[in-house]
Image (cartoon, rainbow, N blue to C red):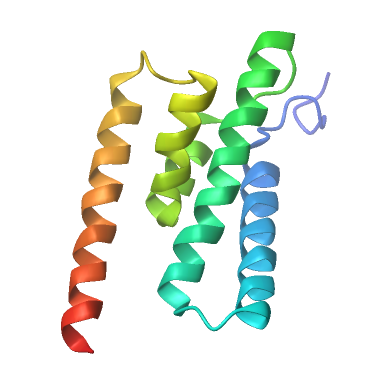
Length: 123
């Protein structure tokens, strides 16, 4: 196979673009259907997509299929999907033995709690 073969390419960009598109789509839908604050909509949208990504990755791990790269799962948590990451770990029992996932989720949680406090204080 040549280096330009699609079978040798990293799936990271495809999974990342799909996750972003789904989160933005869900966010727009929630913004249209609700009057929730945009911060809440973003956290909820990113968390739903992150939760689904954890579930998909767990299913792929069990069946031997194409996995979501760990960097994408970390990126989703850091982009606001920390709640979905925590729930995905608990519900699917996925990535529970990898300390880096715990660290990323803790950092992401602290980051977004800090942002929530700043937003609340500015109201």
